[in-house]
Length: 492
Ligand SMILES: Cc1cc2nc3c(=O)[nH]c(=O)nc-3n(C[C@H](O)[C@H](O)[C@H](O)COP(=O)(O)OP(=O)(O)OC[C@H]3O[C@@H](n4cnc5c(N)ncnc54)[C@H](O)[C@@H]3O)c2cc1C
Image 1 (cartoon, helix red, strand yellow):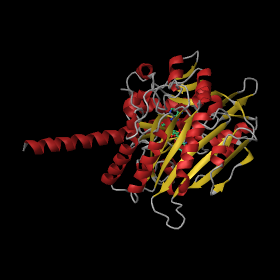
Image 2: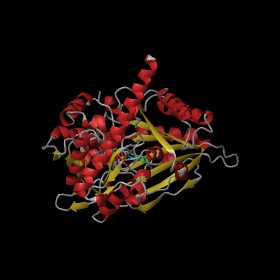
Image 3: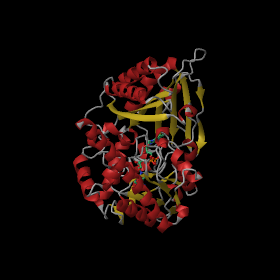
Image 4: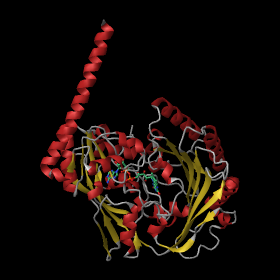
């Protein structure tokens, strides 16, 4: 009797909670539409822009959630209106730029307000100061293309389709060994605070907030509605994709180790990826390939990539005269396989001395072999962190990671599972993948790369500035509005 009463009380209370949540989202949407107008608020799930905003995520899992509406702000004032209405209603919400975060509810929301930046794509360049200013709604390809006309570029990501949320999480690009992380080039940010106030953050205005936004992640301290950044000179690149068959796995691994350890040319960058499909290709063994992107800022890389070019390649597309946008659009194998899959990231940070580079590969390869049939695609990616990169970061004031002197490296792991996998199985595969990653613990003293970390990895806690970030969070999100009403990194 007592048990059934208790159960019905739980049922009533969760039904009430759901009703309140649904109402709160709807209330917020109505209030926002009454100020911004219906054209800026998509309420119907059949609306073409609603469908687009709901489905355009790199991790297809985010598309199963149904926002109460999608708001398309055109200015910081519109964002402020939306935040105040969301606050007043008690609704949940999410902020979406490029939609590439794989973590649940970081840029997706179920029965709440989705603020999608796709209408805020303003960009400009000031030749007198060489500063670039852009709104958050473009992707990096669009930004690189725009600044190309001035012979300049902004610091963003390595792939054109990723969005500007990348810069708030640090932002690693092929130019990082010359100029540091993307957030190191921030000069002035316009921010809508969790209470709806519009303010600016720079070295002199709200310096703590500015500090937190230099790599502390999006949707933590406020919503950035305009970025003013130091632009950088850009010319033509020597760049290409080298593809190797798996027989050369060990040789490429050693070339990677040597590049990380010995390369001192800041114009030379590599991204080394081991990629595996679930099904064995018995004829050509092309279910497993090694793809190395080589990028040189200039026409002639000299011997910078010799370790890689000495190894026989199946395909080599490297050539001079590529624009930076073309570099960011170099084709990636297997994109079709992961384009609508449930994609997830994990990260590791390791020193180049010792055997970690080999251990991460051996564990990854063994896992990929043992779990055939349970994933669509898995990948292991080596990101060198050069001494020149950590020097460049420090010379620009540093960021929240206070990156220890290079060389060291991050490894990113991608797990893509088929959409619609049964929840139990999905959880088991994720848990097993996580155990594989954790079997090679990250080195103490190195920051985890927030942009490619899983939420449970708690990257902020790996930064030496964590206490200060907690304080900034308490100051700017004083009543925990962002903490309680949107997804994001934990600060406890
Ligand atoms: C295919 C792929 C390639 C990648 N390549 C790189 C790379 O080269 N370098 C690198 O550093 N990272 C890279 N990443 C990681 C990437 O930086 C993160 O996934 C980042 O979160 C993507 O930003 P977004 O705007 O596309 O995603 P979103 O999911 O829209 O945003 C990411 C987070 O930031 C928040 N956010 C976005 N904009 C704002 C804003 N204006 N104000 C406040 N919060 C905001 C969102 O709420 C969300 O929590 C890559 C990811 C993928 C999937």
